[in-house]
Length: 218
Ligand SMILES: [Zn+2]
Image (cartoon, rainbow, N blue to C red; front, side):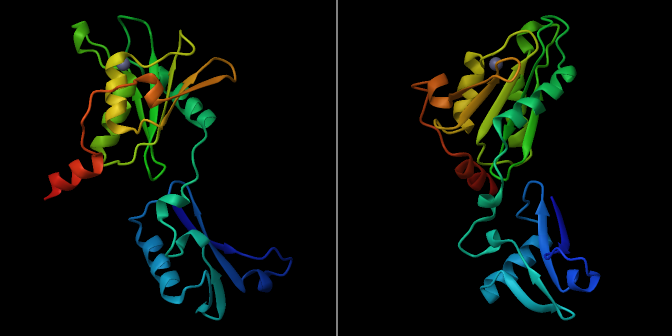
């Protein structure tokens, strides 16, 4: 995440340009960022997204998503299926598949818009092999991610590839039944299923990720 102050008004005059500044946030939102938290508190105190004279006579506009009635996670622009597939494709070269010669890569997105990566990792003892989808999800969980919202998967030699049965059960553990799983259909084509379509009647009950993390923290 990057936060910068940029001129809010397009003007030829350098003086005009610095009169009104705007807070510009790019990249996935990090709710823990101190600057963002201060800006949010400021907006919540004043109830305005345009504050006069906080900066030596200049005024500052802040993004409307910092309003108190809007959660920071709502501000995250959803990553498009096409972007996710492109990201996954870029990981294929990292797959460790010397036995099957079947490279697979996957990415999963959390509530903050962070993207976690995975590739298949094989082993001489074949049964120890782990799929790209599970590597991506486990990486996300290990990083403290919650609210996993969508997953994309691609294989070099099969388009579209679908997650195996074991991965479907793991996906159903951390993504909702309505969450989307995208697969690379080759060329520009993308195939999308819901988690519920991939694994109807998934093994349950389960606890939510948030509940599990909260009880672990107690
Ligand atoms: Zn799998």
